[in-house]
Length: 318
Image (tube, rainbow, N blue to C red; front, side):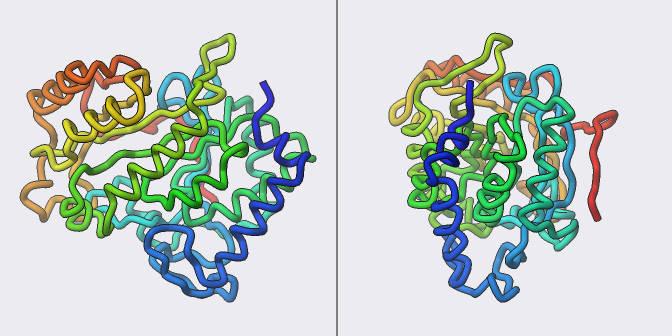
């Protein structure tokens, strides 16, 4: 199966979209924050990123959902910076700080090619929203060099639907979070205004684009949508409302990854309601909610704890 971005490259759509989104960096409006600063001249807004994508690390990730990691791993690129500022962020060392190395189009394209050569099933762009133009420009370089595996758009879900709509025919696999069902919680813990509206409308657009899920002969996803929902203590995440939305507005066939790994990282230890791990009962209740809304496709976690990268090849590029 040929990834959609290859036909978009041949038609000229990929370059046209990359150029269009690159131009938006002049008064940046890639995400709901709409900082409107000129990133092309090196100025930085909320995401702390200028004109070049900053990459903290990359790896052959074997701990993602089975249909993403498969047997050879997902070619995961961790971008520095973020459009959210979650007080409990596991990756705060690079999501909230300017760590990593800035790469131009060629450098990012070569990184993608390198991950493909290692046998990865896909290129998994983690926190791509604020560097989407740079990713697309890198694809324009990478396609004639032989890149031919799907792109995974692995996002916090704080997206502008109008931007996501431009990715139709380019991105084959969407992996968004649906983090909150209450705007007051999103503002308090991730400093994100109107999260629920932007998140839900963006995810609806993703669903429209990749409604028909496709797998290869080995069960690896080549096209589709997987929604991640991190269960937070005290139901801060609003699991029932989120599952109800998915069931009634998307499809009961939607793939969901119900995550139990919450750990009070970063500033969370100083916030009473976030300073503890989930209880077994809280996660069991979240699983019951999936059943209530007949959401049977996807994954639950049998063990608690932060993701363990021990033994996985992580290459930092400081």
